[in-house]
Image (cartoon, rainbow, N blue to C red):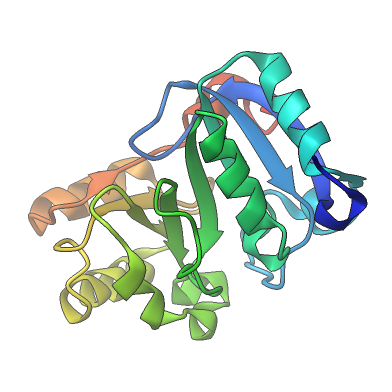
Length: 217
């Protein structure tokens, strides 16, 4: 039974298509937690920095169930900034959902339930938060997890390419390269990946192609 002690501050819970990662296109319930200790210059969810409402685990699970989808994505903000994110992830897995976690590379992922697919966003210099990356997280990634680089320009691309080699990232799990909307052309990024024969996946944000920058999509 849930109690007030297991509450989380929730920005929104909604049903959409997953717009990123290897789960792209799948109907997914998004649980967006409020708050983030980072301030990436290109952030597209600044509305989740504050506000929201407190919900118990029981209420969150009921709202997720109401949408009737098998896939659940816990995101933010930075979801791991709330200590009760870990019990939430575990409860979602226990309820039989296929769960993914979208998190920055800045917070410890070692205690995340192993059933959860961790999507770790390594911050590039263009984000303004590259010094916050917690490289020890890489040791806690498994083959079903994913690493994401959001790239603002060619300098970010070259930096990410260097990180691939230094930390042997491709040997750990799938690696995604994503262009910042309006700053880096997806076509340019595709050409660089092909030119350098990088074993990474180019991703564009499907939800933005479909719905633009609508909140709750």
